[in-house]
Image 1 (cartoon, rainbow, N blue to C red):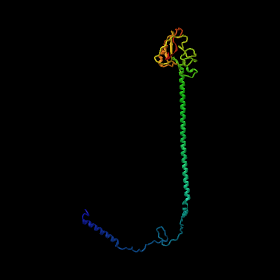
Image 2: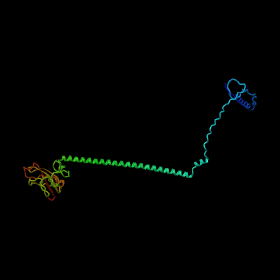
Image 3: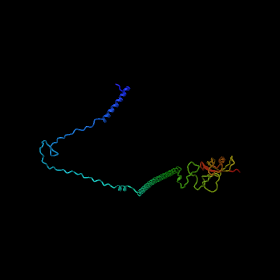
Amino acid sequence: MRYFETKHQKHSARLTTVIMLLLLLLLFVVGPGYMDPPLEYGVAVNFGTTDTGSGAVQPKKPLASESTPVSEPIVEPVKAAPPVQSTKAAASEEVLTAEDLETIAIKKAEAKAVKRQADADAKKKAEDEIAAKALADAKAKADAEAKAKAERLKKEADLKAKKKQQLDALMGGIGANDGTDTASEGDDDTPGDKGQLNGDPYAPSYFGSPGSGNGGVGYGLNGRGRPSKSKVIPDCDEEGKVVVEIHVNQNGNVIKAIPGKRGTTGDICLYNAAKKTALTHKWPADSKAPAKQIGFVIVDFSVRQ
């Protein structure tokens, strides 16, 4: 079933609602008056002489009175209220004067200053400790490096001395002499300083007896006499002196000539002529002479010759 579909149904519903509201309003405003309740005629009360009782037998006469203990009322002690301080006194304690505020500010400033000083001291102490530790580490490192360097130098010196000792032993005991020089000079294959102890270190000969003068032909060939010789002219116009090492056999012939030995002052272009000149030398034969006798000849070259 459908409601409120037509216009008339809607108007009817509105009208019905208005009428119901008016009726309810009339009931509250113009309703029946207040009706008082009927008078009461009392209530039957049981006969008795006390406020309390028990049992099922009703006495006809008043009961004899019994002494009943009267309980005294319990009086609870009243707690004393805490003394109320006067508002004026409390206010006087809480109110701070200007002097108190200044004192508090000064104390706070002093506390801050003390704290800053303590922090600065702690920071300086930490920095000093770090610097001291760094200095100690640097010193320890330097000491360690110095010690390592000293050990390395000592090891190198020991190794050098050992090598020198081995070299001296290999060279036939040269280092066992009392001298301090370790150089080597000579025309042999064996290490050493060939010559004589009282000789001239700049002399061209390794043999013969020491003496004065600047030498002559055939140094080191004592006892072989004077040689015969000729002179070869060099290809260059140079002056100078060429020292030639010669090897002489028992027949007195020069079988080998090596120019440019110590004491030479001439140019290298003079070496070939000096060698050829040395090969022209001829000494008398000597069967008692060594199979190979070594000596020196000095060949002087001059452009005026």
